[in-house]
Image (cartoon, rainbow, N blue to C red; front, side, top):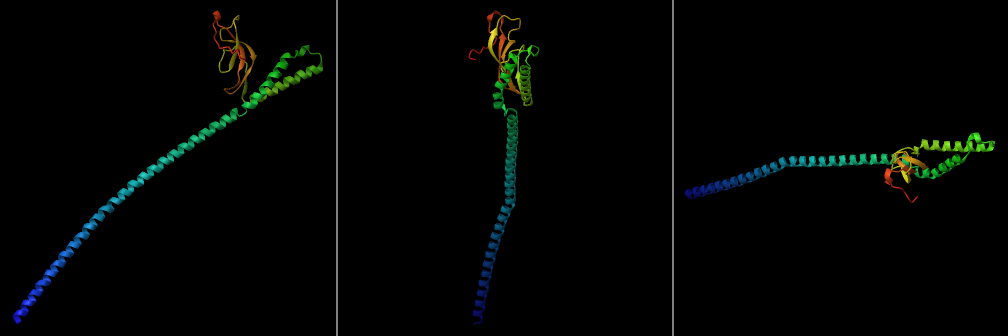
Length: 217
C-alpha cells in the first residue's frame, strides 16, 4: 500500500512538473510576443517624428510661397494704383481742356483782327483790345499751370505725333518736311495730344510727297 501511495505521489509530481513546464513555455511565448510588439511600436514611434517633421517643413514652405505671392501681388497693385493716380493727375482735365481750346482760338483770332495799339484812336476800343489780351494771357497761364502746352511748330520738322498736314507748299526755300504755315495751333498735356496742329509742309523736290496730306479736314 505504501508502494502504491509512493507511485501516486511520483505521478502527481511528474504532472506538476509538466504543468509548470507548460506554463513556463506559455509565459515565455507571451513575453516574446510582448517584446516583439514593443519593438514594432518603438520602430513606429521612431519614424513618426521624422514623418511629422517632413510634413511641417512642407507646410512651412507652402506658407512661405503663399506669403511671397501675396507680397508680390500687393506690390503690383500698389504700383498700378500709383500709375493710375499719376495718370489721373496728369490727364484728368483733358476733356475740360479740350473744351477750352476753342475759347483760346477765338481769343487769338480776335487779337489777330484787332488793330495795332498805335492805330487805335478810340479809347474804348483800346481798352477792349487790352481786355482781350489780358484774358488770353490768363487763359494761357492756366494752361501752363496744368502742363497744357501750345504747339506752334512754324519752321520745325513735321511730326506725325503732333502735327496734321493739310497741304504741301512746293515753291519754298525750306527743306522738304519743314512746317511753313500753321493754320491752327495744337495743344498737348505732357506727351498726350489734345489736338494736333494743322499745318502746311514744304514739299519735296520733283513733286514727290513726303507727308500724308489730310484731305478730309
